Each structure stands twice: as structure tokens, then as C-alpha cells.
Length: 306
Ligand SMILES: Cc1cc2nc3c(=O)[nH]c(=O)nc-3n(C[C@H](O)[C@H](O)[C@H](O)COP(=O)(O)O)c2cc1C
Image 1 (cartoon, rainbow, N blue to C red):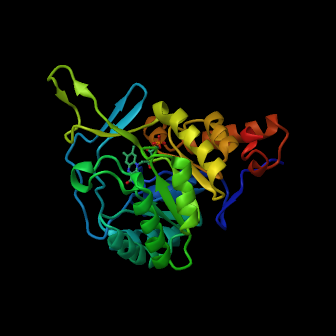
Image 2 (cartoon, rainbow, N blue to C red):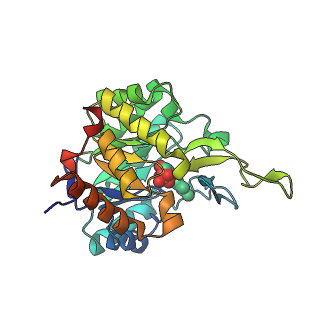
């Protein structure tokens, strides 16, 4: 019988589908709900050492081809997230990935040490958020040197917990960036974060709709960009890839796996299609395995490169 079990950096998952960071990953009960609907793992919303309010509304706008958001990394601070991870652990077996961000290399080390106290299955390092540039400047993920330094300090502070570096396409070469992460000790590459920033204007009032004016673009429109990024990462580095960007059905998830992904995260499609999207994509992935008379997703992985 075909099955969807996968292993990524030593983490066992019943399904390759992961809740992407920033979407429902705020409370233990919302994350548990996602697992109940078929996700193999969940990612918490990115947290910083201290709580952050983020940008005022409107901060999430759907449009015809996806979404644009400038949530601004609002979060309750790392210690509150550690408590939430502990509550989740009491209720749920599926792996939990903790996402962190910071404003300097040293701070990345500190927030990693603090989140590691919650013992998540993976620490995902967000060096790629595009909607806080007014505060932090260009994402660290645009620079090989910064990304290398952050990878090293995070690894030093993560103990035995595997580390995923979450990359942006807005860098000189995402394939080379992934290799830099590998050479500096990363265990997984997550790709990609939102694209842009982009903008939408309300023609009626002749003003940008987001209060922050610009925000990261996600959803269906960025799928081909994310897929090509995964393809390039697979060709340049040997780390497992958590593919993220515009996936909303089994065909797209299978494309990510054929390009080289071990697991596939879903974010915006949860807004459009509800948490039921996980169960549906699982069923559609099983159909792909049956079509190719394959037992496991490992047999599909990277197949588009042969
Ligand atoms: C409303 C919203 C909030 C997000 N917040 C975060 C975040 O806190 N940390 C992060 O690494 N990515 C964040 N992302 C990016 C997603 O995790 C994902 O990388 C991106 O949206 C592409 O996947 P998708 O097209 O399936 O949404 C956010 C995305 C959205 C739409």
C-alpha cells in the first residue's frame, strides 16, 4: 500500500505536509487542529526575544492570484512560545517546528538558546521576512556573509535540535545561499519566504491598502518561483528541503517533491481553503503515487532531475 511517511533530518512525519510559519501557528489548540486535519508537522509563527506588536491593520489582503501581508512579525515573545510548545506536546504527537527571528547575529543566538528550552523538533530560522525592511533593512538572507554567521551562531545555540534556514529568492543565488548554509552547519533548507515586497492600491481612495503600504506576496502566484528555487537548491546542496510557496493541491506538492523537496509547507492555501486543505492534498499525493505505481514519496523525490 502506498504511504506518505517521510523522514527529514531524522524527524519522522506521517505526511510530508507542514503548516507554514505565520498561519494558525499561534496557539497549541490551533496547531493541533491542523494536525487533526492531516498535517505531518506544524511550524509556529516566528518569534523574537521580546513581544512585538507588528503593523496595524489592514495587514493581510487576498487578491486574485494570492495574498499580500505585512503582519510585521507580531508575536508574544519567545518565552510565551516555549509555553505554547509545551502545551502542544501534551496534546499532540506530530513534530513541531519553532520559527525564530532577530535583529542581529548575536540576538539570533540568544533567541535560539531560549526557544531550544521548549525542545521543538526543529528550529526554523527566519532570515527572509520582506515586510519589516523599514525597521531592519534588507533581510539578512540577502547576504552570504550574514546568513553564514547566523547559521553558525544558531547551530551553536540549538544543542542537538536540527536547524532549518528559511531563505528568500531575493538574494544573488538561492542555490549558492543554500550551499553556504550547508557549509556552515545547517540541517534543512526551508524555501521560500514571501516574495517582494509588493503593493496593492485602493483605487477608490487612491492609497495603498496595507497600512505598511507594502508587504510580502504569497499564494498561487509565487508557486513557479518557489518551485524553481527548490530545483536550484537541490542541484547545489545536499540538505533536505522544506518547500514552501503557493502550494494548494497534490499536483503542486508532487512538483515540489519531484524538484527535490522532502516536505512541503502550506500557508496561504489555509486561508483560502481552510484546514481541510491538508487532508485533500494528502489524498491527491497518494493518487500521484498510485499513478506511478510507487510505494513511497522517497521514490518520487528529485525525479524531475533525472
Ligand atoms: C499572513 C502570513 C504571515 C506569515 N508570517 C510568517 C512568519 O512569521 N515567519 C515566516 O518565516 N514566514 C511567514 N510567512 C511566510 C510563509 O510561512 C510562507 O513562507 C509564504 O507565505 C509562502 O507560502 P504560501 O504561498 O503557502 O503562503 C507568512 C505568510 C503569511 C501569508
